[in-house]
Image (cartoon, rainbow, N blue to C red):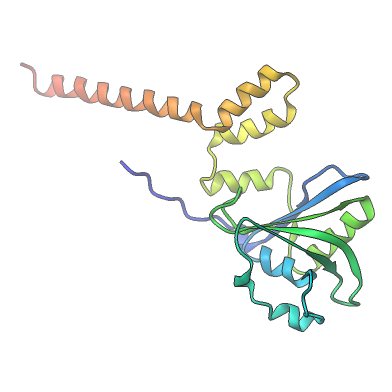
Length: 204
């Protein structure tokens, strides 16, 4: 029997954002945005390479549909108030329901430095996103049916894995193999119970 697809959850239609990589100097820092306004917010501060768009008004009228899911776009984060270039970035677009949260997700991949990452996050929050709570991306993935409870717990196990064996166990869980095993046992018990009830109701 085919399972019903769960409705996409959206907490008060809020779009959340957070830094997805450790804060500090490094090669790449990522700001993740999830929610129905993820792409409009990102595009308000993003200018594609070789683009003729030069003003915030033009940026707002840019064709959102030209940004395809699971594509990377090279460009610059621009402060709309003064036109200042904040950083050269890659923009990763993952549209619902084919994303981790099953919402529209945008990742801004910038140079990793505390000042530049904080500046980009501040712009994202300024133009409509709210800061994500601890574990909120995974919470939305769970509520939207992207992962089950064992997979949600496996995310933490993968992050905290200290040995190859513990990592192996966690990756088994995140693939949903335990849930499949539980469903098989549940189906077996359900059918067994049905046979018992039938034998009680219709004894030979």
